[in-house]
Length: 94
Image (cartoon, rainbow, N blue to C red; front, side):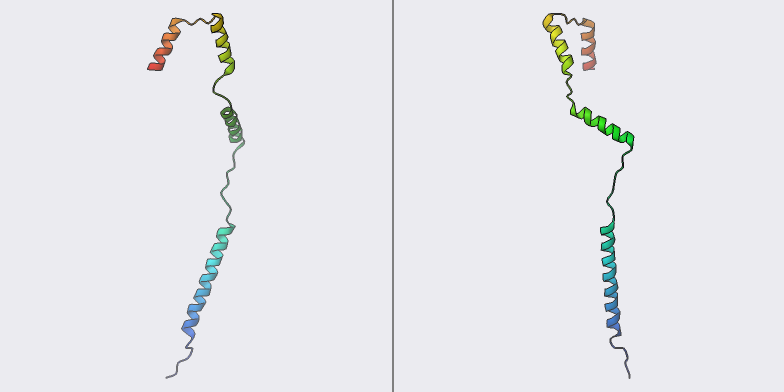
């Protein structure tokens, strides 16, 4: 009996290993080339974002109003109707 190409199965396995390595390398390269996600805001969204940043930077207390009411109270000119006080109490409770 004559057996030819004894190394043939070994060549198949080694060539598959080479192909698998090439595939793995190309997959790694493809992952490295991919761009990162990007967000592009419309001009309306950019304007809104700018206004939101300005509002967040401002204080919630309007010092000019506080000063105005302090002056009215100190001078005795601050007059509040009892109906307004009652309405405000009822609104805050219910």
